[in-house]
Image (cartoon, helix red, strand yellow):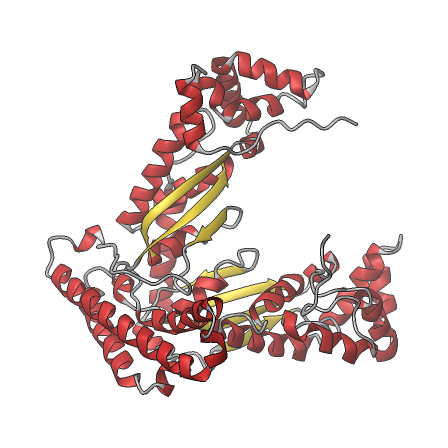
Amino acid sequence: MKVILAGYNIDSQVIEEAKAAGISADKLTPEVISAAYARISRNPAPVNELRQAALNEVAKARKSNRKIIFGMGHHSVAEHAVFNFDIIGLSRLAIEELEHFRLCSFTEKSQRYITLENDFVMPKELEGTPFTTKLETLIDKQAKVYTELHQTLYQRLEKMHPELVAKKSGRNLVDGWAKEDARYATLLCTAGQLGFTANARNLELVIKRLNGSSLTELQHLAKAFFDAGTTVAPSILLFTTPGAYDLNTPAELRTIAQNTLGTMDNPAPKADVSLVHYTPNADRLVAAALMCAASEHGFDTCRQAVATMDDTALKAVFEAAFSHMEFFDTPRREFEHVHVTFDISISAAAYGQLKRHRMMSQSMQRYRPALGVTIPPAVEEIGQTDLFGSHCADAETLYLEIEPELPHIAPYVLTNAHRRRVLVTANLRDLYHFCRLREDAHAQWDIRILAKRMREEAEKVMPMASLLLCGKDAFVQKFETVFNRKPKIDPANPPKID
């Protein structure tokens, strides 16, 4: 066996230095990797020789890419070219749309840990309208409310945790807790920044979808991606223009929904989390899938065998699947065959974390005041509910003024406390990952409550398969309850690495 490191990401400044040193810009394109790997299926030459050939003839490699991707439809070769982008000054609302793309990588400036300045994005659609001044006034008030909440929350926490604030690391921790709740007052037009990584195939899809967005901000982002990407790799970003499917389908579905549902009542959700669908007989289906994967029998045979099991025998299947699990282990893939679907009403602050779980299927509605706001308990405890509520009410007033004329722009002026409705479907394996991370004691309180409620609903309909479903901090206790022994590794005391 021979393994050769074919390439890796390097900083753009290093690429510019290489150009200045006399290396041709054509040789620095990621296209040569795509072109070389595309030839593997039909050319017997070693892969490293194919790469060298593509590097020596970049123009020919680009022509080959276009032929293979466009002519033959082998789009997967574009996945070997990877791009990294610094994105600065994108609104929180636009960031949510970008981070909806499933197979890309994002690292975002956190409003939980960084003190927010008065940075915001003024939507192009509002420029030259009376709404501009009103939004600027609201942003000024946001800055004052955020500062007041941050300072008051910190002072309260300082008194509650004198042992922490005695040290710089503890003061930073307490300050982070204060920022975590103060940020609920910030608007969705607040500017953020992130690092974004995508292979060319996914970047092409991102550009195409953003080009079809109703937000000018996202259309400008699409152009920036396209201009930067095609400068270095013109042969692999080909399908970037949205077609009728992208442009017309959402509007036509909205029309049907309005005609069908317009005269019906539009009640608020019965609960923040409602389990609206799940896989019937989920425990036995997972057990059958586990037996199928571990044997040479077909699934129907395994399902029939599991159907005759009593609860003791059924539990033994799951105990075998879980008995060697540690807190960092994921359940086997057989747990992906069952699903739960939730109708969720969630604050923008918590949705900022939910959206990162992109393997779940998430269908979002727009933010709207009718769903109410999430007021951090700490804000109530410091007696600032009126200040917070007044700010949210001002945001809602401006929303209701903008919404009749520009419904897709109105959410920019709402706060992180305002809610949206999200339909979430997760297979059980994904739910394990979500709860391990988001129900853990270190998780933010809002998303932690959501994860707890999702877990509780799942446990009702698939109690065996969810035996170890919990936050990381509760894993040892859960494991001990099931097996009457502790796991080998305690999350609170992980083994030292020499």
